[in-house]
Length: 312
Image (tube, rainbow, N blue to C red; front, side, top):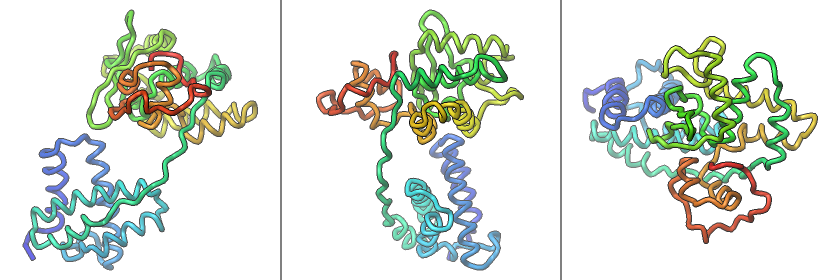
């Protein structure tokens, strides 16, 4: 076996292959790194040695298969998580084979591991009356009420992914006569989405009250001025919708089942198009979908699908 160590391979895979050659975003690199960390911890435990003592001889097909079973069994990961970890391992073993030809046989067997089919999640949404009930029960005064109202309205208006909201900066907003927001999404792609005047007004009030030091400041920040994380936004949505539990239990449970019913995937584009009478390309640009079927293929009924009341 070659004198190249496992540590050298892992380091060059992350620092050179992912960062320099592929130019992945920090979050994507973190995902690869976390997969390798979990795999190496599992391998060390399975081999009965310390992680620093692992070598290429310990990296076998059987341990990859055992790791995938470990994810679903002991860690209770969902099938989608298991598939995501497997995709990262596919990339790593392909790189490993290019650096250490002796590992080609193992890499070929790992590459042959298929992804599992996962059931599609049910598409949930709130109608206009239910959205009205959500905003009507929000308190008018109190700590962070302006921020939380602006946050929920922004989510409703744009259908932005939660990470896009967490990364949003003041410089990404245009709150002039034609307000819009520039969202930085998955795959390092940017897209623009129009803002309703009410949303723009809430954002102006929020920013003016906080008086950020520069345009790189976060739009939605904690009390200490740090940008909200995905988990912080999750808690805000849970807390602000909890009051609906007594008044409208079905609405409350649907909101918390999805955390925000307007984090749309590609499957939601037909529903939006039928409810708004908008061109599919317009909605696709707003929600970040690029594979929109022609209008004639949309079989969703317009009734009961009135989700938005604006451009996107």
